[in-house]
Length: 72
Image 1 (cartoon, helix red, strand yellow):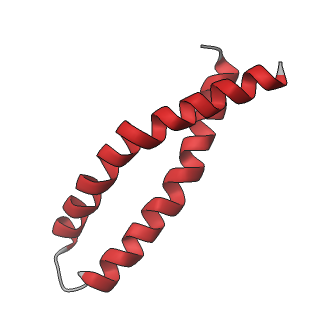
Image 2 (tube, rainbow, N blue to C red; image 1 turned 135 degrees about the vertical axis):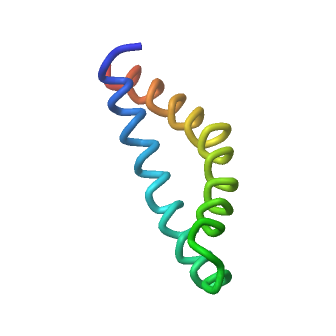
């Protein structure tokens, strides 16, 4: 894996993760504003870590690889 693919994949994952985390934070603030911050963080990470590591990151890896092949 080349350095360019790693950078592209990292940027693609970040572009997906950032709005996802922001949206989940807003949703948790709306639904569970009275819960302790630690519990909100537990809920947030329990949802987002598997979602990102099992679905989003592999998809962004495939997309980055495909984009690099097209640009080469």
